[in-house]
Length: 286
Length: 267
Ligand SMILES: Nc1ncnc2c1ncn2[C@@H]1O[C@H](COP(=O)(O)OP(=O)(O)OP(=O)(O)O)[C@@H](O)[C@H]1O
Ligand SMILES: Nc1ncnc2c1ncn2[C@@H]1O[C@H](COP(=O)(O)OP(=O)(O)OP(=O)(O)O)[C@@H](O)[C@H]1O
Ligand SMILES: [Mg+2]
Ligand SMILES: [Mg+2]
Image (tube, chains in turn purple, blue):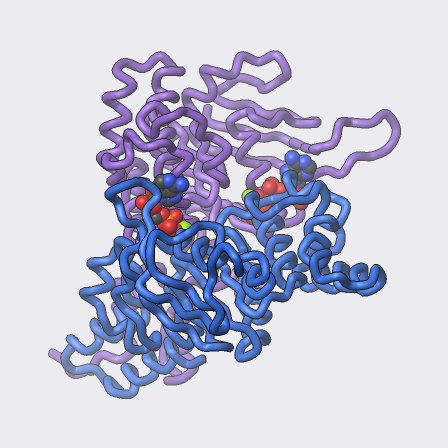
């Protein structure tokens, strides 16, 4: 179950009879479980990340190859509503998914559309969690950038899908809201076994929250695996236009400056601190 | 130079979004604005470029007051990259879009073509000149918006979260461009990325329509409590310094702390 790509190609151009089209995605093979995944998709500007996730809830159809979502093969005539109910997507630009005249109506649209009970009650509940109850009666078109993103995220949360896909969800959020959102996603992942997929350029987010990392480059998947293995290979980061997260940057600098025995592959402030303790703690402390 | 005196603004009666703001930014300064969502950063930016009109207070650009009579003329002095790049685009191709900023400057045709070529290359978008900006990826849109403003070449540039969707390499490249403009242009950068604030000459922190901190980065980031109360945070390096400070029996403790401090704030 979940989402399965097998040799999928995609192009924004209509297939032409003889001339080849530009393939935005090519040779995609990917399996995503419907339970418990926390995946970060990364890769350079224009590498195809947003395109890939739009295929995951069948907004875009393969040019060739096979795409299955919850056991259903995605073709032109596939009925999509049941799939969209189970796979929720927040767009990179929240403006593209917001159209109702009040924030409340907008958040309630998803649950209403999918026939869930008490859509407005659900909307109020998620607005409370995201701290935007004071915006419920406002027109979404008069919000600040960060406020609008929160509304868009609420819209997906309210529909309670099994797989949540968020395209650059932390862009435009203040530091406090950003960590609140990420902690919420972590909780949904740990306690409710939701599969979470985020696209991000923020290596600190990848480092602290993701288990699995998928790297795209020029429309192809060039890495799919756990994050520690990726961050172990400095040359790969360079090749993929990525960076070290802040924790690793700090530890690397310490290691070089003090010639200390440090494993720089740490992914939280606490783990970084523990590594410093190990390297700099007095031996005869006991 | 940008001078703001006692500026106030509300979209709707009764809620002041900009609340008696006064601030002075010198010619050639590089200033970062931080602040929680909805604190008024983009609104202040729109007031500065004359897209919104203040309820009270004054704005001076290079000593000239900004009002209905002067706004058209002063528009050439100050430019903005909007938070949402879609709001930037006027043309149906990337080429038109970069050209738009140049048209008002009355360049000869060859010079225009040269500048379009130069700036599209600067942001690695030279292959996209015939594309419709609507169909670009998020980061590609931001690159084009940045090229547009650089081509327009105003004395004062506001970047409203202009690099928020760029990949790490792209961010480094734009920061490089900004540092080349340092001292020559007045740059106001709005961001939520605390690390981006470090490179600037001065940091302004906004909260509920007011500027509550206004100082060099080294000092602003010492105001831990104020920052936390404003939904901001201190830097990772500083968190580690605090943890190390509170630890007994560490080798090289002083050197460690000093090194981490250096690592954070060395420019
Ligand atoms: N509607 C469209 N029509 C034509 N080309 C498109 C369209 N949308 C995207 N593209 C192109 O497809 C490529 C991949 O775009 P995509 O949005 O998937 O990139 P991305 O990895 O999400 O990039 P970013 O990090 O900048 O958001 C880009 O080069 C883009 O210009
Ligand atoms: N057109 C509008 N009509 C009514 N209220 C508005 C309008 N535009 C913005 N606001 C409100 O004004 C306040 C400040 O908005 P502004 O866009 O300046 O915030 P910001 O600091 O840029 O936030 P963000 O970090 O989310 O971009 C917000 O509470 C917002 O909801
Ligand atoms: Mg994208
Ligand atoms: Mg804003």
